[in-house]
Image (cartoon, rainbow, N blue to C red):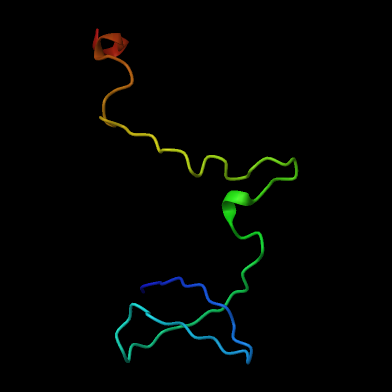
Length: 81
């Protein structure tokens, strides 16, 4: 199942138009409509103490050059001595 997220605003008459969907004409789709809350921008969501709940969201992720390299040198292992 492919998912596609789009944001739209209801027209005055209560209709909703979503254009430029990435599906072929005639494809059966399922539509679920959720009301967007005013604080839905996660970067601005605050905890009860005033701190940003997603403060680490925009930080650069860790990069592992050799993730399978042992954390300690093999000479430090007692079982190998």
